[in-house]
Each structure stands twice: as C-alpha cells, then as structure tokens.
Image 1: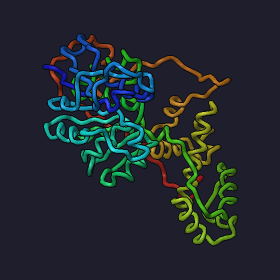
Image 2: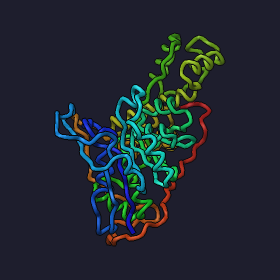
Image 3: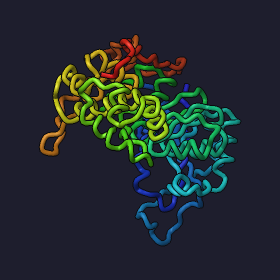
Image 4: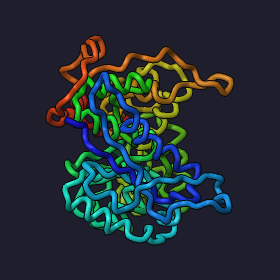
Length: 383
C-alpha cells in the first residue's frame, strides 16, 4: 500500500522569493525522494501552484521561477495537503491570499485530506476556517499576528508543532522538518521515521518547544517610576528578594507596588522575579560552561533541582538540553561536539540497530508522551 499522496502548495510559483525555499524544500526532501528500502512505494508528491504557469518572458525580480504542471484543482484527491508558507504581504499587511486558495483548501479538507501548514502557512489554513476552535502554532515571530487576526484560533507559540488529528501546524523553519518527520512516524512507524532522520543527519525528535528560542524581553511600560527599582533588582538576582524588599526600595507599600508592577508588566512581582532569574540562567548557560549548580546559585534559584524544575516549566527543555542547543562560542565560533546518534522513540530504543526492512502498510499513529516534569517545592521567597 502506498504511503499516500502529498500535495504541496506553492503560493508564489512565479517570482518565488528565495527566502521561502527552505520551508518548501523540507516536504520535497522528506516526501519527494523515494526510500524503497524503508517503504515501497514511497509517497506520491506533487507541487501545486496558485498562479498562472510561467512562460518564456522577463526573469522574475527574485531571479527564480518555479514551473509545475499542477494547480489548485490538483489538491483534490490528495491524502495530505501541505502549505509551507504564504506571501509576506499576507502576513505583514493582511493582503488577501492568492485567488482560490482558501476555497481549494476547504474543498480538500472536506474531501478528507489531512491538512498541514509549516511556518506562515498557518495563515492560509486560518483564512480557510480550518483552524477555528483548534490549537495551532506558527513561527513565534508571527503568532501574535495570527492570534489577533483569527481570534477563533487557539494559538500556542511555545511548541514546535501541533498535531490536532486531521489538521497539523508547525513553527517556522526547522520545526517544519520536525512535523514532516512526525507525519512519517504516523504513517509508517517510528522505525522508518528514525532511519529517515538518521539519513538526513537530524534528530528524530527534538526536546522542548519554541519557548527555548524566543528571546525574553521586558514588557513595555509607561511607569518610569518603577525603572530604578527593577534595574536594582536585576543587579541582585543572586540575592534573596521579596516583594517587601522591592516595595521598600521603591518607597511604596507592598500592595501599591504589587498593583503598579502588575499594571506595568502584566506579571506579579514574584513571577517577574522568576522570569528575570530564568533569563539570567539562560544567559549563563549560553555564555559559560559553569555547572548547573553554579548557574542556579548565580541566577538566584537556589538548588539545581529548583532550576531544573522552573526551567523545564518555563522554557520547555532542561538546562542541559538548552545548553546543547545553544553552545558557548569561542572567538565567534561555536564549540561543536560529535553528532549524537538519533535515538528511537519510546519503546523502540533499538530501532537504529535493526536492519531496515521495507514497510508496506501504515500502522496507527505513534503518539509522543512528554516526560514528566520534576516536582520541587513552591517558592514562597523567590531565591
């Protein structure tokens, strides 16, 4: 039995912007190259353009023109439809999607296709109404726009991808590869997905989510009277600090300080302190090789277990996994260790050591089970 047909939407098949090639190349690499020793037959892939087909004429401004014999009508009948991206103007300026795209996506979904978006492709699925009432994601730089423009979508900017059964969305760039390998795992099993990931020299599964890549920022505030005390606190994150300490420094009552800080930042004082300490820990993990125990001490989180608990809860990965993702740089060059072997999915630890037998039937979807977060005492004083 075939692994299924995959239709990939090319939203700008004439004058295709070079920066969108990455998202487009991911499904082409995963689903377009036959792997007869893993599954035979492999996926049946087609590229479906949204505009008139290119003819001989002036070169596109980007220097790149894609030609495909398939159009939007060819989305019909596909088992899986993937939208890798949409034109920048559709995201930044709210410009309409290419003519007929939303209708074609709705028709494909109504016909039973599995709908998938990578990065900004989520805007196309949202415009078609396919994300209404569903949890979805996109590149973290665009999730705020997605949530504002489509309030019926439950946007989650903390994850690499969301599998909602027949509709799946991913964050930007390499997260699209995570989702495509997840689709292979659903269709053909963990062994095939692991072998394919190994051939592509990537992990079959990356821990954590987008939270580890989102730069922490200080929320804007018009309350300039708080700036000195907040800066004072940032310089003393390794010391025990309480709301009373901060309020006294600001010459306010604890209740007034609590109210003004929450109005200015959207966080309670304790949560603000925790955010700053996690930010300090991230910086130390990125820029030093200090042990986790020392990082937790310098960031004011006390014990290593406390750091691991709050780091995993807020960033989505453990401190050690975060450090591996953002290695310390020396003279501008990252320290690179040997490429680890790609591990199997839970219950399949020997997958990479077994011979690769072709798969001819698709088993039921493999579901990920996230590791349980470590428990630690709640903070009454943020240390």
